[in-house]
Each structure stands twice: as structure tokens, then as C-alpha cells.
Length: 434
Image (cartoon, rainbow, N blue to C red; front, side, top):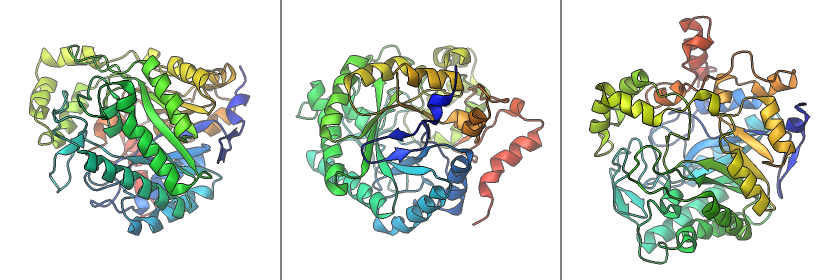
């Protein structure tokens, strides 16, 4: 099958990108503790702009202080951040690449709390079941403030000359905590029925649209099938694809320009990023989270001790051969239901798989994280005629396990001629220096 479909421009209502591959939201702790952006962040994003992607979706970008997931991620929570984002956007644009900033709020799902030490605002006051991140049930006044934070952040993105925003409603962060039937236990107008659970996200989309106008790109990422019981079987399943199709229809009506399809009620999750489960890497790096939640020390012991660690590995691990395109059935269902473009993520790195999905109408574009971390020039390899890159991503997930303690990069030593070559690739994010 020809890869020609990959290189067709994609037109959204307010934006056009040169091809059908977006770099998905992925990065590490590359910035100042307080959320100020750095040259290192710019170096990271330029790897993919030079590599040929049509657009970059920024890493997880906080819209307010209490909603940060971890220190050291660039934020867009105040006006002083605008010059950094303007510079980053201008540098990316030099490579005919668009830049979309992902606006996010952690809710209760925070890997490493900042010095505020406050509990995460959420739809519930129950801690998350995996790590035990503590939560405080958000009041309606809290929700109004969060909506204003998203609207203000979107306005800053527009003032910075960026090409659009993505509202992160997926993977266990605050909007998932409201959307999910497995998490949301409220009894007010933001809980109970699907319509009520979707209210907070829909009101936020409308607030963002009101702040940026109708001529600026706004897309929404959601977990269309949550698989909330994938690791802890006593939990509810959470939202199904049928639930999410209805939410996507409402999002289109609220003013979204595109839907970005993902999966999983948390992050990380057995379905996202699906693949191998490295006990060795988990033991080496999970210690940074020991004080983050009430279950983290328990988890650390289970990662270390046999046979509990083998049970965890079996519950979590997915066959790497089954990873590519795992979300395509969901994206195809969403695409049948809406008239706006649909982007889908999920282990893509094979040109024929991507082109085939676009040609049969399962999606309009794909977003890629791990495949591009492994091969920053993946799109150019497709252009040269490769169906798979010569050294493909192995879905070992070592990039994820290392990201809280070490620079973001590919840590699969089997993909390199030597360990020194691997380390050189990882450390290249610091060149040029600040």
C-alpha cells in the first residue's frame, strides 16, 4: 500500500497541517521548577519539527499552579510565560511545522506534587486506586476558577502566535475524573448521568472558545474507552465507546475543531502506553514517587518482591505485536458520528498501517509519541520509502519509566550500537546549551 495518504495536507476549520502525522504530547522534566520554559524544551520540540511531522502537540502544560502534574514542566498559567511560548512557536514554524499547546489540569493525578502540597481537586474526595493520590472534591466555585484558567491559558497561546490548543480530557486527568462513571461519585449537576459528567468539559470548551474566538484551532483529547478495570479488576469498567461517541457529538456542538482519540482511565495504564512492563526500570525510578500517594510504598514493595511483581507484570503487560493501532476501532466509531477531523494515537510507526487507516476512513490523522522518541525522523523515513524504520520502537516503555528521574529519550539499549550511543542520544536534548 502506498504511503501517499500520509503526505496529504489536513485541513481543520481554522488550521491546515502539511501531513497526517502529529507528534503526540510527550516530554520530560526539561524546564524550571516553577514552570518557566527553557532552551532544553525548545531543543526537544525542534527534534520533531526537523524530522518532518505536520504538527507538534506540546507536552502536558498546566493552566494553573494547583493543577500541575510534576515540577519541571513548562506551564502557561500566567502572562509572563507568553514570551517563551512565542519563541518556541517561532522556532518550530521555521520548519513548516505547526505547534498546538496541550492545556491540562491534573486534578488528583499528580506524580510529584509541587511545594503547594494541597490535595488535588477532583470530582471525588477518594484517592486514586493505583497510587493513592489524594483528592479534594471540587466545589462549583473551584470548577468556575478552573474553567477561567483554561480560557486564560488558551488566550495566552493565541497571543503567543501558536497554532491552536488541545484540551486534555483523557488519561485520568481532571476531565476524565469527571467524565468517568468509574470515578465520578458526585450527586450534583456535575455527576450521575453522562450529560452531567460531561458538563464540566463542555463548559470549559465553550469558555475557551469564548476567549479565543471562532477563528482559532481548539481540539479535545479524550479516552474513548476507559478500561478502568484493566489492572484492578474490582473497579468499574468506566466509560464505553458508546458513551464517548455521544460526548464527542456534544464536543462538536460546543465548538471543538477536532477530536483526539486515546484510551485508559489513568496514566500510565495497561492500554496506554501498551507494551512491555520492565520491573527493573520500575524499581529503579519509582522511588521518586514514594511520598506522592498513600499506595506508592505498597506498590514499590510489590514491584520488588516475588511473586507479587510477577502478578503485576502479567496484569499490566501487553504483547508488543498487538500494540499498533489499538485505538483504531474507537476512532472509526467517533469518525462515523462527527463531521470534524479525528486524530488517533496508539503505537503507530508503520506507514502502511497509518495510510490504510486514513484511506478507509478510520481516522484523519495519527499522533505518535514513542515511535517518534525512538526515531525523531520517522516521517522522513516514510517519505524515503520505509514502511517500518530500520530500528523500530520495541514498545519496551523504558522511555516512560525513566522520565521522572532522567532526561526524556529512548532507553532501549538493544536499538543502539552501544550504551554510549544511547546515552549520547538521550543527552542531545541539552544541545545547544541554554
